[in-house]
Every structure is written in C-alpha cells, then in structure tokens.
Image (cartoon, rainbow, N blue to C red; front, side):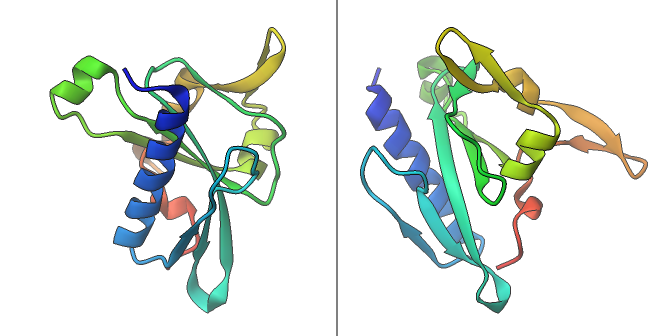
Length: 143
C-alpha cells in the first residue's frame, strides 16, 4: 500500500481532475505545509479555495484548524481490495462554515478530524432523500 503522502497527492490530483471535468479552471499548490491545495475559478471570477483530505480507509480524516471560507473535499480512495476491483473514489464536499456550524470536528488524542461516518450520511431534504455531503458538487459555486 502506498504512503500517506502518496494518498494526499492522489486526492489532490483526483479532486483537481474532477473539478476540471466539471468545467472549473484549477490551479494546484504543491508542498506539504500549505492550507489551500487547489484554487478553482467559478462564475463571475469567484475564486474557490479548496483543502483536500484523502484517506485509503473509511475511518477519519485529520483536520487542523477549519476556516469558514474554505471548501473541504474529503476523498475516500478506497481500500486496496476495493481499488483492485476498480471501485471509484468517494468525494465528500462541505464548506468550512458547515463543519463549524454542525460541529463535525471530533477530538481524539492530540488531534482533531472528521469521521467518515459523519460525512457518509443521508437525510431528507425538501421531501427528497439524498446524501448530505457525498458527491455534493452542487455545494460549490457553479463554474
């Protein structure tokens, strides 16, 4: 199995590719000590700032400080077994404001993060059942 850094980089490139596929011009920042992984441009030249978190396991994603104005895209790269069966990655899209408002950060040991189970949820919205965060690209301003 690949290293943690490889997972992070894979997540960033997957998100950049998905945003590009959906019509957003994107710029990827490089390095390990950065708060913003991707800049994307939406309608009216609005800049979307994205922090990407990727994991190969369906447990949690470590998150440091949450910024209300950022978008967070959590990527489940799938387990080695699921990947060998060509299971696609899962994307969970949420704003920093939602993370803070809904108190989704969990504290454990010396860090904080978001649990997979907190994002992999379905509720009824406007008389329709749907995912709260999974594949919710519509939460981003349109390209």
